[in-house]
Length: 175
Image (cartoon, rainbow, N blue to C red; front, side, top):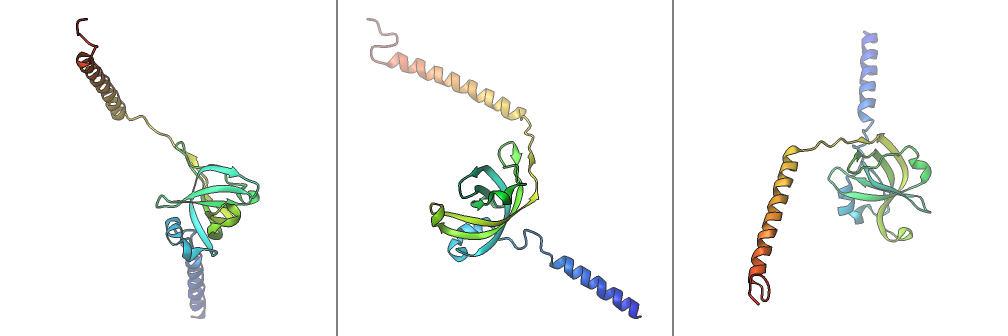
């Protein structure tokens, strides 16, 4: 009987410890919320998660990153070069960028960084590495593009012919 109680207590303890270990998104503030409520978060420590997009821009103070949240809103992050060593792929047309967790202080107006609304990172953790994106050719879009280009050329020729025949001193007017 005591053995069963001990096993149940141990199982409950393990289950609760696993449930209480928050996933990266659970403790994070949405990027669009940070921007919309910048006054409330100004000077406070925050955690965000999102995709690294654009370029990693090295500066004297560190490196600028742009983190894109789930709702399509991005925020600038100033990070120390050492904290982003394993960050490698930024999102663009051909790639999904590294998915990062950033912990740092949010500033509505960072005077030392030109007045930017940004996060000065204390920790940058890679949750998932970025990867290439394959884009397939849509034959329907290609055909539509060819048809519309041809129609535009024909329409342009017709307009030019009509404009030439009615122009003063131009077209088919005898001299």
